[in-house]
Amino acid sequence: MGIDEPKELENELDEEDQWQLYASAEYGSNYDAGSDDEDTEVVEEEIWFDGDDFEMDGGNLDWDAPPCPAPLGIAHVIKLGVCDCCLSRISGSSPDRVAIDAGKELRGKAYDRDPELVSKISQEICPLCENLFDDVENIVSRVIDSLSGFEFSTLQFGIHLPKDLIQEEDRIRSKFGAQGSLPLKGALVRSIHERIAKENMDVVFVKERPDVMVLVDGLTLRVDVDVRPVFLYGRYRKIARGIPQTRWPCRSCRGRENGCESCNGTGLQYPDSVQDLIGEPIRSALGASDTSFHGMGREDIDVRCLGSGRPFVLEIKHPSIRDYKLQDLVELVNENGAERVEVDELSWCNRPKVNEVKSSRSDKSYTIRFRVDSEIDSELVSDSILSLSGTEISQETPKRVSHRRADKVRKRRIVSVDSVAVEGDEVEVTLRCEAGTYVKELVHSDEGRTVPSFSGAIGAECEVIWLDVEDIHY
View 1: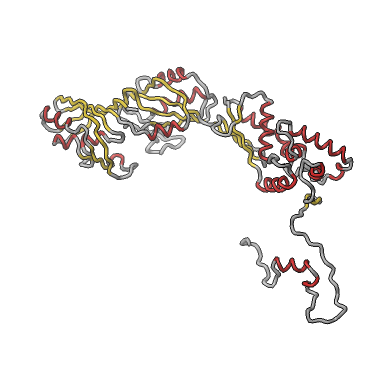
View 2: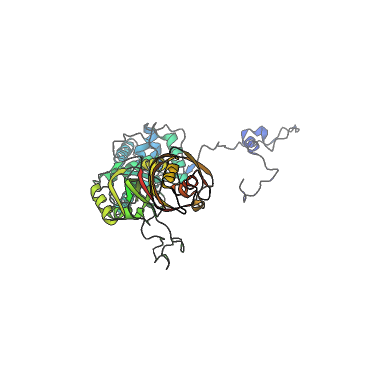
């Protein structure tokens, strides 16, 4: 019982007792078990229905009618007022035939068998589809308008129908429809597919990974189009310092739409990023709305990434063009990112590549230069650092990233220390480390949060001057 529904009277008969009132006069309220009067009034038995009968605009469904494709079954659903398209599908007509044509043929044969059948039709609105098939032309027109300007080759189509309509259609079709008759939603989608095909659109209808998804609201005929993104895989080299990998919102306005004076209205803390230096020329070329950047880890803003470059996947959102000469895109990127960011090649990929790139655990080679704050013995420094080759280190989350990383101790391995060069109070080291190693902290120890460290091995304070990612071994 709903919250706002009135409570039934306590002395009201329950459903079973009410049934007994109509089952036999012996259980009627006028029967007195203790009376011997011969003139007992006989209560006329009332007609009782078990609930399987309901009205359709004044006409009752005959639940004893045979299902389609029996002639009497076809005649019965015609009486209910079904349209030609619904008549075709519930009668089990071949799906290869145009529904409306097959329905007209079935209706014509039924009228030939019973000339008075047309006068027995109970309503003008089809009880199975509420005349939605009459709107197919309108729906297709809206779909084509919504897709204009977009390049695509595969399409997934869906339609949302009111729940009560689906339930009513299923109730009638399950009783009177031919075995294997097509449900309303599937029949509507098929009709729309056939109508779109007549527009000579070179498109394939698919059930997964479409270029474009179209959803129609069967109640309002609203058309929503979702142009699926395209993905490009590549490796970038960042050859200039001071550039973040992804967009960095302004600290003052936090990246609001119109920005602030601090960011000159850009909403960005840094005007350039690897994401935009690569993504913007591609976004423009493909007529897309925006991009997302998925990199295999990231380097700090002040760190260069050299060698073969860092693997990444660029997600291009809502592109109007889905195919473009890849070498032309490479040239656009290198022209836009001149002396800052560059790529050698790009290739088309799909969404699973994003997860592959982001979840990869690849070793990395680095060159790092740092200054020692006291007099040092070149040979001692070199031997001390080389002794850490192959060592496992413990790194507590660095202070500089503690605001965005969980505070825990990570075990990482220094795969190899390849070279050590000492020049005065400065030391330059080339090494290879396991993925996830904080190399700057390996140098200065982060106040003892990284053990062992170069600082601890040398026995002096160290200050990082610069760091380069030499290669990512992927």
